[in-house]
Structure formats: C-alpha cells, structure tokens
Image 1: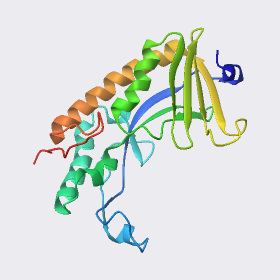
Image 2: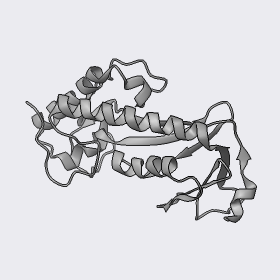
Image 3: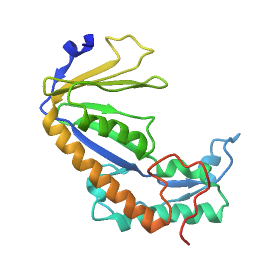
Length: 220
C-alpha cells in the first residue's frame, strides 16, 4: 500500500470533466519571433462558441452537450483561417486540445492532467477509474507533474505533486468515495465520446480522439 494513502484529505466527492479548450486568437505567424508584439499583430480574433460556460477558456462536456453545432462552428473558423493562412495541422493542433479535470470547488481541491491533450490519453485514466476496484489505477509523471491514483476499500485515492519540489509543500492528496466517482466517470465517457463523434461529423475529421500524425482532410 502506498505510504501517501494515509496522508489524504477526505472529500465527499470530486467532479470529473473533459474540457474543450477555447482560444480567443488565431496566430498565423512563425514559431519564433524577435518582437513579442508579433504574437498580437500576426493574429486574428476568434469568436467564442455561443455556449454558456463558467470559464471563457474552456467548454465542459456538460456545457457542450446539446450545443455541438455551436462548438463545431468555433472549430470551423479555425479550419477556415488555417486554410487562408496556409497553416499545416501541426501548427494548429493545440486549438483542438482537451483537458481532464477532477475538482471540488467548495473544498478548493483539484487534480489536473496538463500533459494529456487527446481523448485517448484522457480515457486511459477514465477507463481505469471505472474498471479498477482495488489496487493501482493510474501512475504518470511528466515535466514537473506527477499523478498517482489508487483504489482501496470502496474509495479512490489521488495524489498530485511536483516531483522536483519538496514533497510536503508541493502535493495534493485526496480521498473520495469510489461509487459516486465511477458512476460520474462512466457518464462522462459516454457524453464526451458522443460529442466528439458529432464534432467529427461536422468537420469531416476526428482531431480530438488521438494524436494526429498525418494531415487531416476537413470538410469544405
């Protein structure tokens, strides 16, 4: 049993969400510039999706449900601008990134996954949360970030820390009831997969599920 399990803070629940990241500008300049103002000068404004959301920088799957057409319209303008400025997909892939968040706003607690950009990466966590009743669920680390998840005694234990910092000062350790979290995650998986399927149909290419290695062909 991991030693950190005894150091967790008990919470009644965590909200799980997959978020579609939203940008306010489309940058079409070179990767590197000598004048930082070029990032503003060589950019066009993006209209945000016409969806009510709690944060302007993201649309949660629960907010996108039933508003897939509005979210597709946001992405369609990115495709249009990329064509206009002759930008390859590799230069615009970050406009299609997703984020997984687990949080409890009342308790001011959260677990983030900043290096998971595609649904395939995110779903490795979600699938393991649903299927693992006891034992290690997920363990990963990358560039100043580490997450460990463990299931035991009808609870899920989550640890997030910066492995480069002092352990006592740079970690979040939480414990939540497993049944409620698993039910929520199961619904989240179904909801997100449905939204991605709808977006893929609208744009003619799926650029959310997995890392794209070849230039996608978007609908005209």
